[in-house]
Length: 210
Image (cartoon, rainbow, N blue to C red):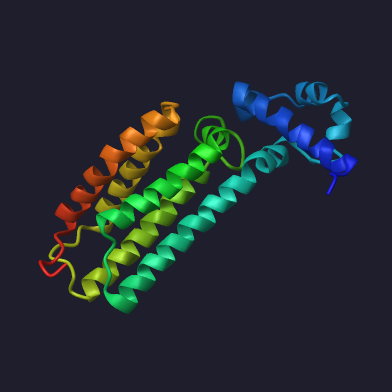
């Protein structure tokens, strides 16, 4: 189906806005310059986006919403398996989840770069932290359930779990911060996943039956 004139205009605006946000960050981006690059007046932008923040959210929102939904889905599935079958995520399963996450990052690398490095001053500034908080909550729920099922020898305090999850994300998102190529990221993740998995196993001290 052929895109309408309005749809093409929005696509052009989003492309120009993305380039401007990538170069100058949200705070430094200029709507007038975006309009010029898109071949329209500044006033014309407001027909489609009421302000700069709404425009920024339109650029990063679809990918951000998808990754949040995906992480929620994975967390729910892992807890469901634990409840139904006493199945603890093993190294292979953990590796699969991380690679799915990395795949999506590279499919939307510029968006993750914007969210990590260029979102200051926007309503999306805290998005990565919101993902981390989501994962902290799901990790704590998973550990609580493992303890209820007597699958753990040790259960660290909640504040320690939160710190560890935050560090995990910092290490994982280093692929964006350092702007790694996909080849570099693959090698990094190949080493990182077993490193993190072994660390969690040591800290939690799963029972010998697992």
